[in-house]
Length: 398
Image 1 (cartoon, one colour):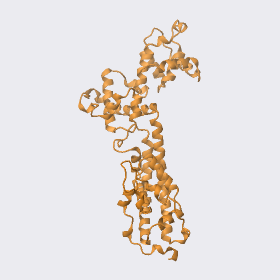
Image 2: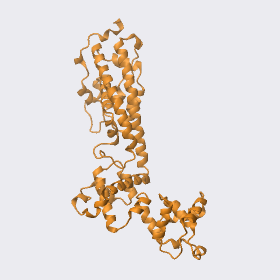
Image 3: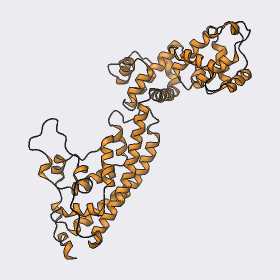
Image 4: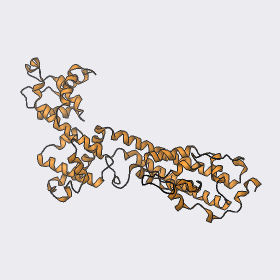
């Protein structure tokens, strides 16, 4: 062993940092959006010089200790490779769900990080090992509002100032070089996983800011639940404590929200899965008791119940939209119906025309599907008739 590396000669494993003391002085958790970004930034700053500087700040380090730590890193790499695939699969569907089964227990960051727990545990251990146990890290008397500094911002491995080594890493024993290479491999793998977590959380926040998108996810959840319980809807008693807003936060939030959109925006990824299931059952039973929607309508309009309510109102009073000239004709203007078709966005155009006929209560004949389809194909962006009708229909209450 070269003279300049003699500080590796006589280190006992008993001299490892006291994790309890370090945990008291630094914040090692990072299960938040800002915490994730802090760790990603820390990993990006990792370099040979920082690694050696962190190593030199330890009093004595044995090669046995280096080998043991390297073995832990390699084990974490192996497990993280598998867990990263699990995270990728989980993340692909995460933001397509109104609620997940763990929303009531953990934040989104925690749920994502749980998928790569080997990586998150190991990065905490690595930074604990390589961060000086400074007594200045925590004040003697801390106020109630005191926030512990992040270990990822105080370590020479990442952001803290450091004294560069006089020698390159190639001058150090092979075991030290191997630990650096394995740490670099581990950090690269972890950075990819954490970056994915950050992107998923960014998308989550983007969705949460859009009440219409949140509402679409809630309606999809409700429609899925409808297909599970539709055969027993008539036998469900919703006048029990199970459906009380005092015992169910989802029902309480829905009743205190002015609109379905407001509820969906507030509840997206915040409510308990089972609570939302109970809420949807309550709403479905109430709708069935009123005889409000047919399965055919729900399928045609993707279970968008407020839209179906609006369409019932619009079509029943469709004659009020006609000007004097249009009202004098035997048939309804196909262009008007084409505008409504374009506005409602049904799954099937032919089925929409049948739906229109079933709900129309006026005195005119309804044009056939082919005539309406011709008019729909002629509609262009900025069409004056469509713009006028759209403005009226958007004001109709659900």
